[in-house]
Length: 354
Ligand code: COI
Image (cartoon, rainbow, N blue to C red; front, side, top):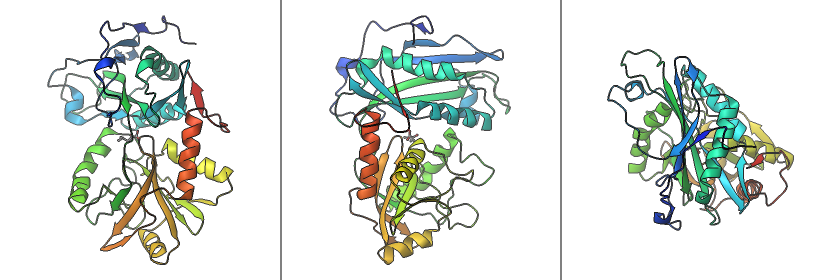
Protein backbone atom coordinates (compact mmCIF):
# COMPACT_ATOMS: atom_id res chain seq x y z
CA UNK A 1 0.00 0.00 0.00
CA UNK A 2 1.40 3.37 -1.00
CA UNK A 3 1.10 6.04 1.62
CA UNK A 4 1.70 9.72 1.05
CA UNK A 5 4.75 9.50 3.31
CA UNK A 6 6.69 6.97 1.18
CA UNK A 7 7.44 9.68 -1.36
CA UNK A 8 7.86 13.39 -0.94
CA UNK A 9 4.76 14.56 -2.83
CA UNK A 10 4.15 18.13 -3.94
CA UNK A 11 0.93 18.51 -5.88
CA UNK A 12 0.26 21.20 -8.43
CA UNK A 13 -2.46 23.70 -7.65
CA UNK A 14 -3.17 24.24 -11.35
CA UNK A 15 -3.96 21.08 -13.26
CA UNK A 16 -3.58 21.29 -17.06
CA UNK A 17 -6.03 18.48 -17.70
CA UNK A 18 -8.86 20.74 -18.88
CA UNK A 19 -6.65 22.03 -21.73
CA UNK A 20 -6.19 18.54 -23.16
CA UNK A 21 -8.33 17.27 -26.03
CA UNK A 22 -8.67 13.60 -25.09
CA UNK A 23 -10.20 12.90 -28.51
CA UNK A 24 -7.01 13.92 -30.35
CA UNK A 25 -4.20 12.55 -28.22
CA UNK A 26 -1.70 11.19 -30.73
CA UNK A 27 1.40 9.72 -29.08
CA UNK A 28 3.59 11.37 -26.43
CA UNK A 29 2.61 14.96 -27.04
CA UNK A 30 0.98 15.90 -23.75
CA UNK A 31 2.16 15.05 -20.25
CA UNK A 32 0.27 14.64 -17.04
CA UNK A 33 0.51 17.07 -14.13
CA UNK A 34 3.24 15.34 -12.12
CA UNK A 35 6.53 13.50 -12.48
CA UNK A 36 8.71 11.33 -10.27
CA UNK A 37 12.29 12.47 -9.74
CA UNK A 38 15.09 10.71 -7.88
CA UNK A 39 18.67 11.93 -7.82
CA UNK A 40 21.80 9.83 -7.47
CA UNK A 41 24.70 11.76 -5.96
CA UNK A 42 27.60 10.96 -3.63
CA UNK A 43 27.14 7.26 -4.28
CA UNK A 44 23.51 7.05 -3.19
CA UNK A 45 19.94 7.60 -4.27
CA UNK A 46 18.19 10.47 -2.53
CA UNK A 47 14.58 10.75 -1.36
CA UNK A 48 12.19 10.16 -4.31
CA UNK A 49 9.99 13.15 -5.08
CA UNK A 50 6.71 13.47 -6.92
CA UNK A 51 6.36 17.04 -8.09
CA UNK A 52 4.62 19.11 -10.75
CA UNK A 53 5.71 18.21 -14.30
CA UNK A 54 7.84 20.97 -15.68
CA UNK A 55 11.12 22.21 -17.07
CA UNK A 56 14.39 21.32 -15.38
CA UNK A 57 17.23 23.79 -15.52
CA UNK A 58 20.51 22.21 -16.64
CA UNK A 59 23.85 23.59 -17.88
CA UNK A 60 25.19 22.99 -21.42
CA UNK A 61 27.94 20.82 -19.91
CA UNK A 62 25.38 18.23 -18.76
CA UNK A 63 27.03 14.84 -19.29
CA UNK A 64 24.09 13.23 -21.11
CA UNK A 65 24.13 15.93 -23.81
CA UNK A 66 27.66 14.91 -24.76
CA UNK A 67 27.86 11.15 -24.33
CA UNK A 68 24.23 10.06 -24.38
CA UNK A 69 24.46 7.94 -21.22
CA UNK A 70 20.71 7.41 -20.91
CA UNK A 71 18.27 4.52 -20.89
CA UNK A 72 14.50 4.43 -20.83
CA UNK A 73 11.49 2.16 -20.56
CA UNK A 74 7.94 2.12 -21.85
CA UNK A 75 4.91 0.81 -19.94
CA UNK A 76 1.23 1.64 -19.77
CA UNK A 77 -1.55 2.18 -17.21
CA UNK A 78 -5.04 0.98 -18.10
CA UNK A 79 -8.34 2.33 -16.84
CA UNK A 80 -10.56 -0.43 -15.42
CA UNK A 81 -13.12 1.49 -13.39
CA UNK A 82 -13.19 4.56 -11.18
CA UNK A 83 -11.47 2.62 -8.36
CA UNK A 84 -8.98 0.58 -10.38
CA UNK A 85 -6.09 1.27 -12.73
CA UNK A 86 -3.98 -1.66 -13.95
CA UNK A 87 -0.29 -1.93 -14.66
CA UNK A 88 0.89 -4.76 -16.91
CA UNK A 89 4.04 -6.80 -16.15
CA UNK A 90 5.72 -3.72 -14.76
CA UNK A 91 8.30 -5.87 -12.93
CA UNK A 92 9.62 -6.89 -16.35
CA UNK A 93 10.27 -3.24 -17.11
CA UNK A 94 12.17 -2.93 -13.85
CA UNK A 95 14.30 -5.98 -14.61
CA UNK A 96 15.09 -4.84 -18.14
CA UNK A 97 15.90 -1.31 -17.02
CA UNK A 98 18.25 -2.65 -14.37
CA UNK A 99 20.05 -4.69 -17.05
CA UNK A 100 20.15 -1.71 -19.45
CA UNK A 101 21.65 0.47 -16.71
CA UNK A 102 24.33 -2.08 -15.94
CA UNK A 103 25.29 -2.30 -19.62
CA UNK A 104 25.90 1.44 -19.88
CA UNK A 105 27.56 1.71 -16.49
CA UNK A 106 24.79 3.41 -14.57
CA UNK A 107 23.44 2.75 -11.07
CA UNK A 108 19.75 1.98 -10.79
CA UNK A 109 17.08 2.62 -8.19
CA UNK A 110 15.83 -0.28 -6.09
CA UNK A 111 12.79 -2.27 -7.08
CA UNK A 112 10.44 -0.66 -4.53
CA UNK A 113 11.33 2.87 -5.58
CA UNK A 114 10.61 1.95 -9.20
CA UNK A 115 7.41 -0.05 -8.67
CA UNK A 116 5.92 1.94 -5.81
CA UNK A 117 7.07 5.23 -7.33
CA UNK A 118 5.22 4.53 -10.57
CA UNK A 119 2.13 3.40 -8.66
CA UNK A 120 2.19 6.52 -6.47
CA UNK A 121 2.66 8.80 -9.48
CA UNK A 122 -0.26 7.25 -11.30
CA UNK A 123 -2.46 7.52 -8.25
CA UNK A 124 -1.69 11.23 -8.03
CA UNK A 125 -2.51 11.64 -11.75
CA UNK A 126 -5.27 9.04 -11.96
CA UNK A 127 -7.58 11.46 -13.78
CA UNK A 128 -5.08 11.45 -16.65
CA UNK A 129 -5.60 7.76 -17.41
CA UNK A 130 -7.81 7.95 -20.52
CA UNK A 131 -11.28 6.46 -20.27
CA UNK A 132 -11.74 6.20 -24.03
CA UNK A 133 -11.60 2.66 -25.46
CA UNK A 134 -8.10 1.93 -26.78
CA UNK A 135 -6.38 4.93 -25.17
CA UNK A 136 -4.00 4.53 -22.23
CA UNK A 137 -1.58 6.42 -20.02
CA UNK A 138 1.90 5.76 -21.41
CA UNK A 139 4.58 5.58 -18.72
CA UNK A 140 8.09 6.69 -19.62
CA UNK A 141 10.74 5.98 -16.95
CA UNK A 142 14.23 7.20 -17.89
CA UNK A 143 17.57 7.73 -16.27
CA UNK A 144 20.28 10.06 -17.54
CA UNK A 145 23.80 11.17 -16.63
CA UNK A 146 23.73 14.46 -14.75
CA UNK A 147 27.39 15.32 -14.15
CA UNK A 148 28.28 18.84 -15.17
CA UNK A 149 31.69 17.70 -16.42
CA UNK A 150 32.52 16.77 -20.00
CA UNK A 151 35.25 14.22 -19.31
CA UNK A 152 34.39 11.02 -21.19
CA UNK A 153 33.98 8.85 -18.10
CA UNK A 154 30.83 7.41 -16.58
CA UNK A 155 28.93 10.15 -14.81
CA UNK A 156 28.86 10.17 -11.02
CA UNK A 157 25.49 11.83 -10.76
CA UNK A 158 22.24 10.69 -12.36
CA UNK A 159 18.57 11.48 -12.33
CA UNK A 160 15.81 8.95 -12.66
CA UNK A 161 12.49 10.37 -13.84
CA UNK A 162 9.09 8.96 -14.62
CA UNK A 163 6.80 11.04 -16.80
CA UNK A 164 3.43 9.94 -18.13
CA UNK A 165 1.45 10.81 -21.23
CA UNK A 166 -2.14 9.99 -22.22
CA UNK A 167 -1.88 8.39 -25.67
CA UNK A 168 -3.83 6.90 -28.52
CA UNK A 169 -2.52 4.20 -30.87
CA UNK A 170 1.18 4.38 -31.81
CA UNK A 171 0.57 3.11 -35.34
CA UNK A 172 -2.81 4.14 -36.62
CA UNK A 173 -2.51 1.78 -39.60
CA UNK A 174 -0.66 -1.33 -40.76
CA UNK A 175 3.06 -0.88 -41.39
CA UNK A 176 5.28 -1.38 -44.44
CA UNK A 177 8.82 -2.52 -43.77
CA UNK A 178 11.97 -2.64 -45.81
CA UNK A 179 15.34 -4.18 -45.03
CA UNK A 180 18.43 -2.03 -45.45
CA UNK A 181 21.40 -3.01 -47.60
CA UNK A 182 23.59 -0.51 -45.88
CA UNK A 183 22.69 0.06 -42.24
CA UNK A 184 22.57 -2.16 -39.17
CA UNK A 185 20.98 -1.60 -35.78
CA UNK A 186 23.16 -3.66 -33.46
CA UNK A 187 26.05 -6.09 -33.47
CA UNK A 188 26.86 -8.84 -30.99
CA UNK A 189 28.70 -7.42 -28.01
CA UNK A 190 27.06 -4.01 -28.51
CA UNK A 191 24.08 -2.44 -26.78
CA UNK A 192 21.24 -3.80 -28.95
CA UNK A 193 19.51 -5.63 -26.11
CA UNK A 194 19.55 -2.58 -23.82
CA UNK A 195 16.86 0.08 -24.02
CA UNK A 196 19.62 2.56 -24.61
CA UNK A 197 18.68 5.97 -26.00
CA UNK A 198 21.43 5.86 -28.65
CA UNK A 199 19.91 2.77 -30.27
CA UNK A 200 16.93 4.89 -31.22
CA UNK A 201 18.96 7.90 -32.38
CA UNK A 202 21.01 5.60 -34.60
CA UNK A 203 17.88 4.26 -36.27
CA UNK A 204 16.41 7.62 -37.25
CA UNK A 205 18.50 8.22 -40.37
CA UNK A 206 17.95 4.75 -41.90
CA UNK A 207 14.25 5.04 -41.00
CA UNK A 208 14.06 8.40 -42.76
CA UNK A 209 15.68 6.88 -45.84
CA UNK A 210 13.12 4.05 -45.72
CA UNK A 211 10.29 6.58 -45.36
CA UNK A 212 11.51 8.47 -48.40
CA UNK A 213 10.93 5.26 -50.32
CA UNK A 214 7.41 4.84 -48.95
CA UNK A 215 8.07 2.45 -46.03
CA UNK A 216 7.29 3.11 -42.39
CA UNK A 217 10.24 1.43 -40.69
CA UNK A 218 13.38 -0.59 -41.31
CA UNK A 219 13.27 -4.33 -40.73
CA UNK A 220 16.73 -4.83 -39.26
CA UNK A 221 18.88 -7.75 -40.33
CA UNK A 222 21.84 -9.13 -38.40
CA UNK A 223 25.04 -7.12 -38.64
CA UNK A 224 27.34 -10.01 -39.51
CA UNK A 225 25.76 -11.98 -42.36
CA UNK A 226 23.06 -9.51 -43.15
CA UNK A 227 20.46 -12.19 -43.64
CA UNK A 228 18.74 -12.99 -40.33
CA UNK A 229 15.73 -11.02 -39.10
CA UNK A 230 16.32 -9.03 -35.93
CA UNK A 231 13.64 -6.51 -34.99
CA UNK A 232 11.88 -3.42 -36.22
CA UNK A 233 13.26 -0.88 -33.75
CA UNK A 234 10.03 0.06 -32.06
CA UNK A 235 8.78 -3.54 -32.08
CA UNK A 236 9.79 -7.19 -32.12
CA UNK A 237 8.75 -9.08 -35.23
CA UNK A 238 6.60 -12.22 -35.59
CA UNK A 239 5.60 -14.17 -38.69
CA UNK A 240 3.13 -17.00 -39.06
CA UNK A 241 4.42 -19.52 -41.60
CA UNK A 242 2.21 -22.50 -42.34
CA UNK A 243 0.55 -22.34 -38.92
CA UNK A 244 3.74 -21.84 -36.91
CA UNK A 245 4.47 -18.60 -35.09
CA UNK A 246 8.12 -17.73 -35.63
CA UNK A 247 10.16 -14.93 -34.05
CA UNK A 248 13.91 -14.27 -33.99
CA UNK A 249 15.60 -15.73 -30.92
CA UNK A 250 17.14 -13.29 -28.47
CA UNK A 251 20.87 -13.34 -28.91
CA UNK A 252 22.18 -10.13 -27.39
CA UNK A 253 21.29 -7.84 -30.29
CA UNK A 254 17.50 -7.81 -29.97
CA UNK A 255 15.47 -6.01 -27.33
CA UNK A 256 13.72 -8.56 -25.08
CA UNK A 257 10.24 -7.11 -25.42
CA UNK A 258 7.61 -7.53 -22.70
CA UNK A 259 4.90 -7.85 -25.36
CA UNK A 260 7.12 -10.32 -27.26
CA UNK A 261 7.30 -12.53 -24.19
CA UNK A 262 3.54 -12.20 -23.59
CA UNK A 263 2.81 -13.23 -27.19
CA UNK A 264 5.00 -16.33 -26.89
CA UNK A 265 3.46 -17.40 -23.57
CA UNK A 266 -0.11 -16.96 -24.82
CA UNK A 267 0.51 -18.76 -28.13
CA UNK A 268 2.11 -21.70 -26.30
CA UNK A 269 -0.84 -21.84 -23.92
CA UNK A 270 -3.16 -22.05 -26.94
CA UNK A 271 -1.06 -24.87 -28.44
CA UNK A 272 0.00 -22.76 -31.39
CA UNK A 273 3.45 -24.03 -32.45
CA UNK A 274 6.01 -21.36 -31.55
CA UNK A 275 9.59 -21.21 -32.73
CA UNK A 276 12.15 -18.77 -31.36
CA UNK A 277 14.96 -19.24 -33.82
CA UNK A 278 17.12 -17.59 -36.41
CA UNK A 279 15.03 -16.87 -39.46
CA UNK A 280 16.40 -15.57 -42.72
CA UNK A 281 14.80 -12.86 -44.77
CA UNK A 282 14.96 -15.26 -47.73
CA UNK A 283 12.79 -17.74 -45.82
CA UNK A 284 10.20 -15.01 -45.22
CA UNK A 285 10.26 -13.86 -48.84
CA UNK A 286 10.02 -17.44 -50.13
CA UNK A 287 7.14 -18.17 -47.75
CA UNK A 288 5.41 -15.06 -49.04
CA UNK A 289 5.90 -16.08 -52.66
CA UNK A 290 4.65 -19.61 -52.09
CA UNK A 291 1.59 -18.47 -50.14
CA UNK A 292 2.49 -19.88 -46.69
CA UNK A 293 3.36 -16.57 -45.06
CA UNK A 294 0.01 -16.25 -43.36
CA UNK A 295 0.65 -13.28 -41.09
CA UNK A 296 3.32 -10.86 -39.97
CA UNK A 297 3.04 -8.45 -37.08
CA UNK A 298 5.13 -6.33 -34.78
CA UNK A 299 4.78 -6.54 -31.00
CA UNK A 300 5.72 -3.80 -28.56
CA UNK A 301 4.40 -1.82 -25.61
CA UNK A 302 3.63 1.27 -27.64
CA UNK A 303 2.53 -0.56 -30.78
CA UNK A 304 0.82 -3.56 -29.03
CA UNK A 305 0.23 -5.88 -32.04
CA UNK A 306 0.71 -3.96 -35.29
CA UNK A 307 -0.15 -5.70 -38.57
CA UNK A 308 2.63 -5.71 -41.18
CA UNK A 309 1.24 -5.04 -44.60
CA UNK A 310 4.42 -5.39 -46.64
CA UNK A 311 7.98 -6.65 -46.24
CA UNK A 312 10.38 -5.43 -48.90
CA UNK A 313 13.86 -6.88 -49.46
CA UNK A 314 16.24 -6.43 -52.36
CA UNK A 315 13.61 -5.39 -54.88
CA UNK A 316 11.04 -8.04 -53.88
CA UNK A 317 8.00 -7.41 -51.73
CA UNK A 318 5.72 -9.82 -49.96
CA UNK A 319 2.39 -8.86 -48.52
CA UNK A 320 1.69 -11.20 -45.62
CA UNK A 321 -1.83 -10.10 -45.00
CA UNK A 322 -4.20 -7.34 -45.73
CA UNK A 323 -4.03 -4.13 -43.78
CA UNK A 324 -5.74 -5.77 -40.80
CA UNK A 325 -4.36 -8.21 -38.24
CA UNK A 326 -4.65 -11.87 -39.21
CA UNK A 327 -6.43 -14.40 -36.93
CA UNK A 328 -3.39 -15.11 -34.71
CA UNK A 329 -2.44 -11.44 -34.38
CA UNK A 330 -6.04 -10.45 -33.68
CA UNK A 331 -6.53 -13.15 -31.05
CA UNK A 332 -3.32 -12.04 -29.34
CA UNK A 333 -4.30 -8.38 -29.52
CA UNK A 334 -7.79 -9.02 -28.12
CA UNK A 335 -6.55 -11.24 -25.32
CA UNK A 336 -3.72 -8.93 -24.26
CA UNK A 337 -6.11 -5.97 -24.47
CA UNK A 338 -8.68 -7.71 -22.26
CA UNK A 339 -6.11 -8.98 -19.73
CA UNK A 340 -4.71 -5.48 -19.39
CA UNK A 341 -8.16 -4.15 -18.55
CA UNK A 342 -9.23 -7.09 -16.33
CA UNK A 343 -11.96 -8.12 -18.78
CA UNK A 344 -10.79 -11.70 -18.99
CA UNK A 345 -8.90 -14.25 -16.94
CA UNK A 346 -5.26 -13.32 -16.25
CA UNK A 347 -3.70 -16.81 -16.43
CA UNK A 348 -0.12 -15.70 -15.88
CA UNK A 349 -0.81 -13.11 -13.17
CA UNK A 350 0.46 -10.27 -15.33
CA UNK A 351 -1.75 -7.48 -14.06
CA UNK A 352 -1.01 -5.33 -11.03
CA UNK A 353 -4.01 -3.23 -9.95
CA UNK A 354 -3.15 0.01 -8.18
C1 COI B 1 7.70 1.18 -26.39
O1 COI B 1 7.09 0.35 -27.04
O2 COI B 1 7.39 1.51 -25.24
C2 COI B 1 8.86 1.82 -26.95
O3 COI B 1 9.81 2.01 -26.26
C3 COI B 1 8.82 2.29 -28.31
C4 COI B 1 9.03 3.76 -28.28
C5 COI B 1 10.30 4.10 -28.94
C6 COI B 1 7.87 4.54 -28.72
